[in-house]
Length: 447
Image (tube, rainbow, N blue to C red; front, top):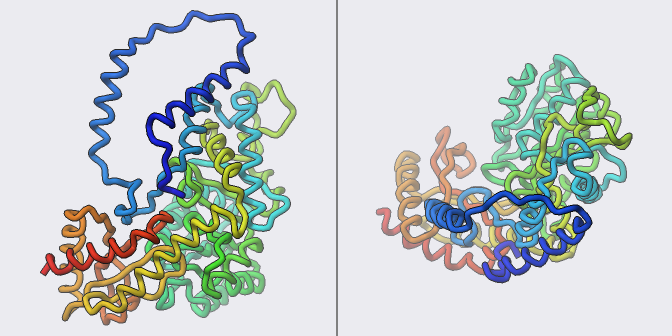
């Protein structure tokens, strides 16, 4: 699904037809003098641009499995491009009438996916901005209180806390990269914690924090729970999760706020993040006066519930169109794509575990696999992992390197350099044997 493409000619034809249909809606306007356009010069510059873009890894291809890069679906690309003929701004309603309505509908569908009938939420530039808004609201509700997150949570939480002037403390993880509930309980018992960040899909390993236990502890100690599901949020639709992850996603609707990134598993162009609040009354913290942008409508403006001001309506249009094609439902086409990615990760993990050249970490909970190279010492393992990384790239397989705790691999060392693969394209299920073959060749060449 993610790698499906219409091809250049078909995409151009689809876009041309849609642009013509869009123009029909404004045909009653009097003609205006068009600005002079040098099509030859534009063609020259676009050719130059295309050549410059060759200096990229093939992020769209299944042999790219390094970072969290998934190609937008053709409908998202075309809807995004179509909206640029209008170039709406989803700050004030006057600047993006249709796209604002589409954003509300698209965000409501995300909230419904998590079981929320009522919510407050909007799109934003990505997970960092979305998490900033969630922690900003948490600060307003618990001024001066500590924010805690697992030691494997994204570094953005500690950095955002510093920006917001909030004390931040990490909580120890277990051997599977998940927040340790006992360590959290001990920290809560000391008092002063206002917000617990539960990560549902860590960036490094895809580990899922034990959300039911976290929620129970939060209730006992009066803390707020923010679910950072920027990466893993859509897996709530997957039908092939193991029980611990399934329980966590089943409980996500009990969190106070949720972040999810449609530009990761949601088939959207960068950047498209989303922040959701279970209690719509937190909108009171966003209240402001701006008469020069809110002069023609009494309706709620998205700019009144967002820290960002100007925001691309194109992101909302693309997400809305994609969700029209792929409704967010268990058992649907979109959900089956997630399940395929998870099957690919499980297959790769099993193959690595059966190969004496590798030492994989724990079985993946989502679709990220991490493994070390089996060597006599951690230092030798780290050095060879870096060589395997380079040799794999020579064979067009692009992975990532990660510095992770040695305990994840049963190693008696603080940290080790390992290899990491993000199998987020459904096509990875079919490409897993080829990936495994290239890995074996790269490992042997790295000797």
